[in-house]
Image (cartoon, rainbow, N blue to C red):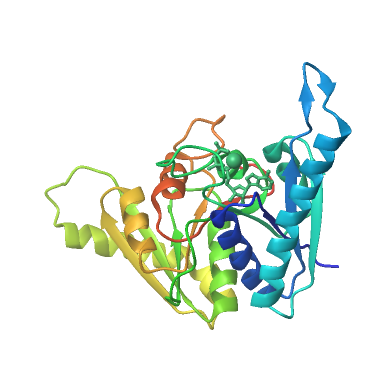
Length: 281
Ligand SMILES: Nc1ncnc2c1ncn2[C@@H]1O[C@H](COP(=O)(O)OP(=O)(O)OP(=O)(O)O)[C@@H](O)[C@H]1O
Ligand SMILES: [Mg+2]
């Protein structure tokens, strides 16, 4: 059987937005949807709490899962939905779940944190830490834009974001906008001339993906400037922004490059961070 899409829920509105996104994705790719809630085991001073309290935690978890499953089933009737109540540390449990998933989907925020927090610990603890796509859903779904944005750096050795962006665009009948921005001081050469050279290089490098996905229209956007700003600006008119977990520029131990980190926080549409199965570089 093909790998399921996994979505984590914690009773927050943000998590329900993630459920709708995940149900839609599962429907488009004919995959099953597994909805997971992770409950913290109730211990105090190393000893488990009373049974009655544990039962209350389980009941609350089951209520959240039932609410999420009903929402998923109502929004996408063809999708097979299952639920799972697990115990432990949320990020650790979801990381383990990711091993047999096509994608892991979470909300940008949950029930904890403070009012102005842009990204909770779960999204941050998953993105770049697990192989494959981690999708962080910001807010409720808005009108369909028909565009998937892919962040692209020609200097990177591998481009896992492009595979996912083209697959997602293909399944949505959407176009792909490949965005490359470079943060360098202005030179005496005309910016237009440089942009034209960079655009040609990007187009050449995209050939394997355009050949594999002939039905997907591609737009190349190149400009001098900050890549986070360029991607976040493009996110305002996109259904999804896809970035790799890290490029070449970051220190080897970093799990998330600065661009991916920034886009995860500030994009105004769902963000997929894709880590290749085997670390390059
Ligand atoms: N216990 C949980 N079980 C399953 N998924 C969860 C759980 N907690 C959070 N999530 C998922 O992670 C998303 C983000 O929640 P997260 O906990 O990271 O943010 P927060 O609660 O705002 O802040 P904090 O990091 O302080 O907890 C949720 O929308 C949900 O998809
Ligand atoms: Mg939380």
